[in-house]
Length: 285
Image (cartoon, rainbow, N blue to C red; front, top):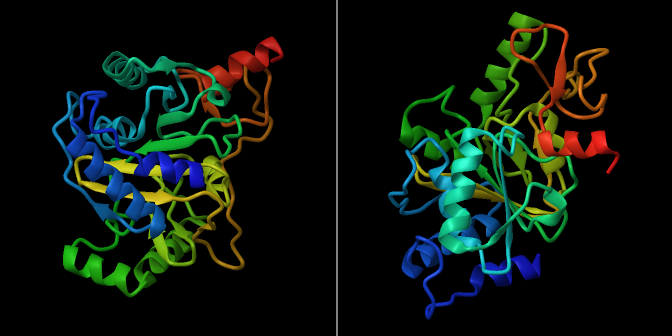
C-alpha cells in the first residue's frame, strides 16, 4: 500500500510522459489520493477531452495515464477479452503514447485496465486495477435529484436502495440485479461496482490490490484501497449469490470454476469470459 501511494505522490515535472500534461496528471493523482483516503467517496475531477468518446473508457484511461510510469506493464481487457475492440484500441493508445510494455497475463502486469471484469488470476499488492465506469452513482435508479443524492450519501441514508432490493425480491423471488451490484465500502459509502458481474464482487472484499474507478463522462473518481471491507447489500435471510449455471463448463478448457459466458447463438455451449486465463488453463499453465 505504501509503495502504491508513493507512486501516486511522486511527480516528475521534467519529463512529458504520455498524452496528458503534468498539470492534468497531478490533478488526477490528487483526486485518486483523496479517493483512497475516503474509500467509496466519489471525488469530482476535471475530466479532460481524450481521443476516445466519453462512455468508451475515458475515465479509466485518464487514471491509467496519470498513474502509469516507464517501468509499468499494462494489461487491458474488455469484458475479460484481451482482443476486444475497446481493449485493443485503449491498449494501443496507452502503449504508443507511453512506450510501456504490454502483456495479456495479469500476473505479469502492474496495471490492469478493465471494462466490466476482474481477471480470474489473483492480483496482489503490486497491482493497480482500473475499472471503467459508465454510471458512478449507485442511487441513480432510485433517486434523480442531485441535491437529494448528495444528502443521502452525506447522511448514509440508503433506505431507498434497500427498498428497491426488497421490491425486487418480492416481485421475482430473488434479487435479480446482476451487473453493477451495489456494495457498502468500509461500512460507510455505497458504491456502483460498475457492470462487473456478481461473480467478481467477492474479489473486492479485503483485496490486496488497489482498485480505482474512473467515470470520465460524469467526472468522478472513487477507490477501494487494499484490504478494505466491501460488502454487497443483501438481507440477513437472503444470502448474496454469484451467477452460476448448473453443469456448465467451458467448451474450450473444461473449467467449471471460472466466470462463463454463453456462446452467441447457442444455449448449451459456454466459454470462459477471461480469454487469457482460459488459454493458459487449456495449455496447463
